[in-house]
Image (cartoon, rainbow, N blue to C red; front, side):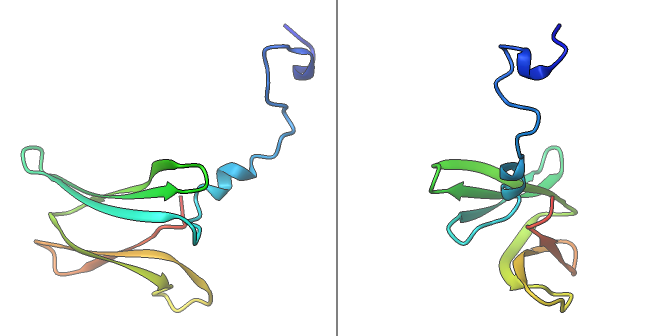
Length: 111
């Protein structure tokens, strides 16, 4: 056991290193490629929408969000305007489902 993590040869990440790169993963950048996938499992009656992001600078593909839906996903549309009327832009996903008449809107820039 070491009194200070800096003395431990097995620790390669310093305690004071900035973790801002983790925060950047939650923001969809203009250079990212986004793919929305609607999934339905009729046996378990589970319906989801997955938002996959491909970062061309690092050639990585990851699931950015995974939303549960009340019924089969029927349609989706991406929006860059906040539907609440707030200033600024963002990434929003509108999803319509088969059995429910309402449209759900998800903020893709949140955790």
